[in-house]
Image (cartoon, rainbow, N blue to C red; front, side):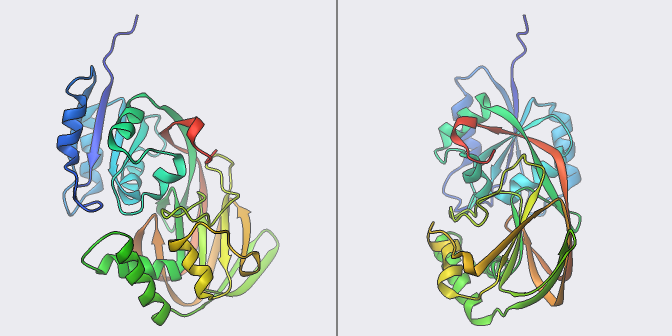
Length: 297
C-alpha cells in the first residue's frame, strides 16, 4: 500500500491583486491540521524564470500551485510545460480569468481544498511569438487597456474602468491581414484575439466555441469600434453582436498589421509589434480542476 504523503509547492506572487490577504500565512494555517507536506516560494519583484524552475526542481512536489493571477499561472506553466506535474490555481489576481474559466472557487479554503484533492486535466496552449499563452492574447484595444492598467497605481475593476476610458479616447482601429487555410483576410479591426479559452476575467465570453482540449484555438476579429460592444468585455456578460465580430478556428496563424500595435498575453502587456505568429502546443500542461464545475472541456 502506497502511504507516501502528498507534497505541494505553492508559488505565491505577493504583488498580485489587492494585497488584502496574507496568502503565506493563510496557507500555513489551512495545512496545519492536514496530513500534507508543503513548501511556499514567494516570487521576488523581479522574478527570474530560471530561479522558479530551480525552486520547483528542489521541492520535488507532487503538485505545484500558482497563487496569483493569470501572469503567475503562466509563469508556473512555463516551468512545467510538457511535464506531467499537475498545476493548481489559487485565484489571487485582479481578474483571474483562467481560474474563472476552469470553475476554480474564489473562496480561499475551497480553492486550497481543490488544489489538494482535485483531478488533473490535460490542456493545450498556444505559443505566440515565443510567448506561452494558456488563456487569451490580443492586439489592439484590450491590449492598450492592459498597458494603461499596468501604469495606474491601484488595482481592481475601478482601475480597469479608468484604463478603458483612456483607451476610448486614444486608441484607433488597426489594418490587419492574415491567412487561415486558403482564405486571405484583410480587415480594419478594433482588436484581434487569439483565444485558447472562452472568457475574460470579468466573465465576458469572447469565444463561446473555445475548449481547452479540442486541438485548435480561435481567432476573434472585433471589427467595429463600437463603444457599447467593447464595454461588454469589462462591464457585462451580455452576448456580442454577431455583426461586430468574426471568428475562425486554426492550429497555426500569422497576423501582420500595417502599423505597430499593442500586444498582451494572459494579462501581461508585451509592447508594440506588427507581426504575430501563433501555433498550438498540444497536451501542454496538466491543470487541477473540478471537472463537474467547468465548461472549459
